[in-house]
Image (cartoon, rainbow, N blue to C red; front, side, top):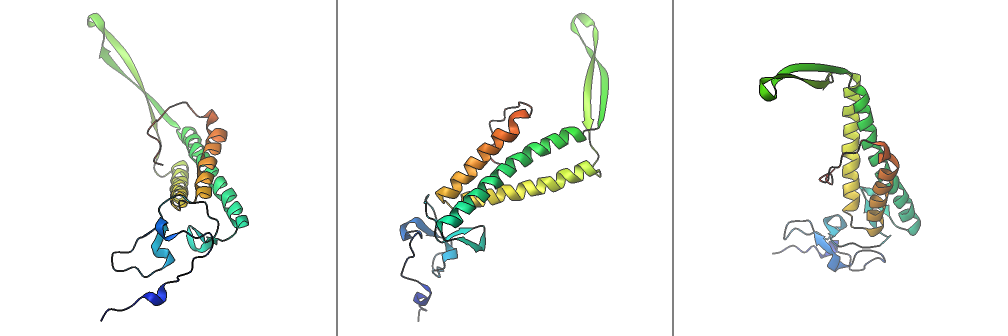
Length: 187
């Protein structure tokens, strides 16, 4: 005898929730229990009701809450960009032990030239390195939060992530050393 799970299903949809054709179950086949946590939107949508945000108890249910979430996510993305630049500046300032090594190298017509190399070091058990480690952990956590927010496929929140990152880059990156890394899209 097969067990029915129909008592778990709610046939009525709330306004602003995702239509069934936009949801894909994350449960293995045959294990769908009709839970909202088991289905997620796989297309972009612009709803402001019943939108989960990072934690199960944090759900957006009104235009005002969406506006507040937009502002918070925007500033979180700006903070992420600022944190990246701040870590670069701290790293440059903490590089204290600089050594110059000279070595002879063969030159043209049998001459010998002296080549000088600059070596920059940092101690593992130093305050600057510990600070960099803590800031790196914060940067990784914030980047995963931003990724998970974007993966809600909510258009408003995706725009907040992109606009916040762009604004943060505009405000914080103008003084950094110009090194173009075209592969720097996977934070």
